[in-house]
Length: 333
Image 1 (cartoon, one colour):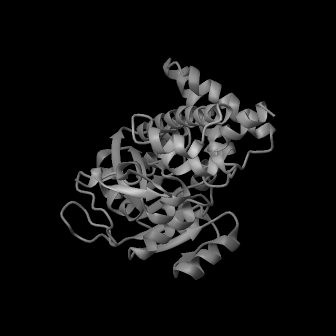
Image 2 (cartoon, rainbow, N blue to C red):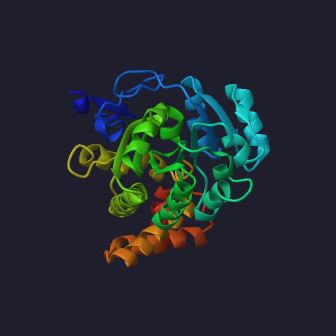
Image 3 (cartoon, rainbow, N blue to C red):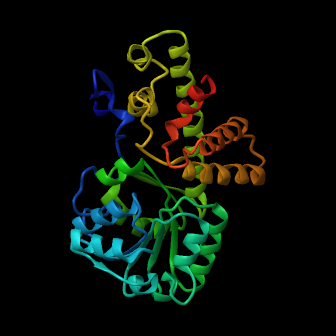
């Protein structure tokens, strides 16, 4: 029955499934302390690397769940601020943060950033012992994921690729969608820890499968946001009340999370409410590279990527992804 409930947004109501999807497979909703499928409490010593808009609250959820968390951030002042706010610890290097940890979680920027926190004399792998688990929440290429999976295996370290979806609000509220790749036993150990900030967590397949699933997520979002932008743009040009239009069409087959959560800010010309265009272009670049490798055809994704390039030229690299609507408005002066 829960998937039939409605939540309110202004004067509208939308199916709750667009906001928070039900979980299954032994994962509990709203757990303050991670539990495995047997119900046993799993407290651990954890290192968290990367305190951006996603990593900062994710690390906080781990500490609040009862884990012992040590954080690392390239800008140490942010790590110190996190430790002061949440009562955990901070370290000067990834290696120092990972030393003695059972689990190391990372949420950094791109392939090169991930390599830098994993490898080298000060990298996390140098501080991790055999049998420990490295879980990567960064959106990166499947290529670097498999590279690091191999490097970790040589040291007896398990590696799980676990990119996330849900945006800053999902991280802050602990309701992220987590899609994973890696060995089954490594995933089974990591899942109760990930549960501190996940509404759903699933293993999709072997190493790299999580990243490939995240690409599916970004491909779907790109097309949805462009479609929504065009619909709102068309309504404006036709002299229609965009809010009234959404009130009607959101209750039918056109309804989506993007419509429910972004239409008002789009109409109000506010584009500071989510995932930045610069990061989306990074992700779509990964999608298109992977499509070339796999032989997949992504014509809409390639087109929307160029539209986001236009937004960057407008100075909107840090605007959220719904700014495709602003691009259409500019085209019409």
